[in-house]
Picture 1 (cartoon, helix red, strand yellow):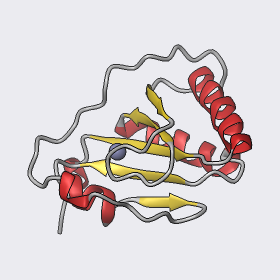
Picture 2 (picture 1 turned 90 degrees about the horizontal axis):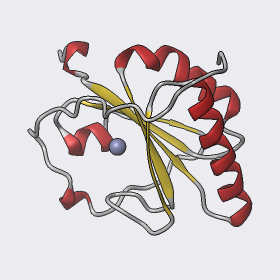
Picture 3 (picture 1 turned 180 degrees about the vertical axis):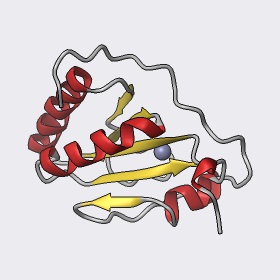
Length: 133
Ligand code: ZN
């Protein structure tokens, strides 16, 4: 059995495709920033890494999971979200250990993902929340 202490941090990847979904995703991004101490990644309108739809990444620490993930359940407004742990096994973290909210999307370019890297600690937060989630 693996131990949950292997989880150094989490990512939520928030996907969008059509223009109206992009607008929803950008609004959601703002609302996340207002409510959670997280590291918001760049908005990728072009496909990057294993992702087959435009998206942005939210990096957050283990303690934030219990509030951010339920909040996303209630507020994702139809967007597909992949939440995955960072344990240092990039490939299985994305492909096998993640959970999806809404639509389950395929992942591509899996040869880019490595196993046995250093587990990614949460990135330095770049949000200053002012609203209780
Ligand atoms: Zn990720």
